[in-house]
Image (cartoon, rainbow, N blue to C red; front, side, top):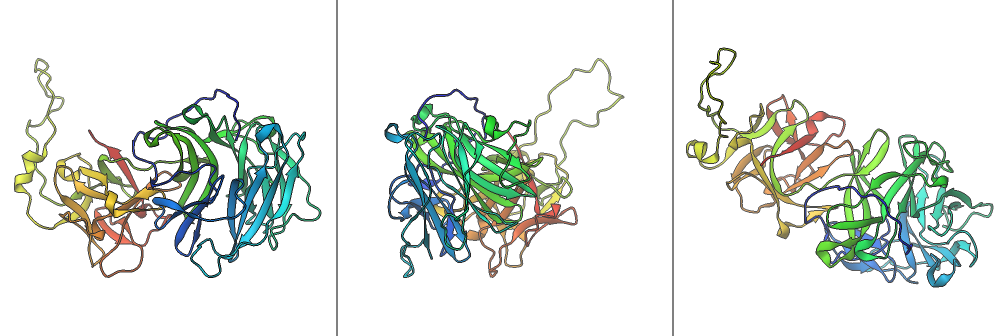
Length: 479
């Protein structure tokens, strides 16, 4: 919650213009998103927070007492531990503050078991101390089962201390350990043998001029030292970029990680200012990717025209119609040297559509020739809702209403678009940068299935397997 100005570089993540969560996603300092009773919840600075039925459309609905700043939440066993801070952050010119935690059996206010325990103080700072007790981050070590709390701001050190995972209280012998400077809104995660300390660098609370961005360092020990990708210690201002600004959205802050399943992770945070939403602070969710042992924010696929390419073989997904040859004849070494060079026009939909069969048509994967039957328009369907971090889309042959459709026999075809759920698709980036494509539903089937490629040329629907290239796809943007 720093208010002074520091210049930092920003880098573009994506170029689309409609990547905000929808509904009323207005929040500042969001906690890590928690699922409870099939709904999603996040808390923010001030009173209460946001709730979503599907993870895409957000409204007010997350309730917590005591107001306070910069909360976080974590699920331990069958209970939720919610932390928040009272004052701190240099607010009012002082550094005195407290970090508190409290429990609830559910985050759903309509649940009869909804009741918070009285909060307990787990860390505090004095008015003249070189640390602010604000911006809590909760971390349950999956290796040891120990519970840790990080806190602090730009006005001093980021510190960590140990809590009791059974009570949420500070352990009697806990020591506050300095682990970083020059950041705030800290959080910790664990991945593949490494502990990562995430911090928010830059300036907040200045609207469209906020320079917040999320950085990290890593260590083999939960207590650090946390070094960035060039070996700088975060105690000396180090930090590798994880979430920068993107076009028309600035001020990425307050990292939260959601692991949905193997290969499918999300990062939640806020934008200090969304230029398309009156410059307000809004909730953001992006895929969380890993490259060379470092986390970074991925993309939401923009509306547009694409080739859809299988990771298995590199073949393109196409509507299975007869191949139509282009004119021009053969060209090679025997071309006459004096022959004029000309530009050959692309094959167009008008060139071939008249010969396509009516009704349902099979789908296959084959050599990518960028032909009309291999060109797919992907477009969000606003009335269809979404999932955690993305909208449902339709996938149609460009210039037509021939939509990719899941069938009752767990296959895929193209058929005229009606808006049915088997024609709505969930497209999300995986931790390795490839993409998963899943129908919203499959007729007569209750299990989640994904588009997979088997036997080089055969797309079908099957269980998603992150360890198999059959389940992964790429998108090549077309003009």
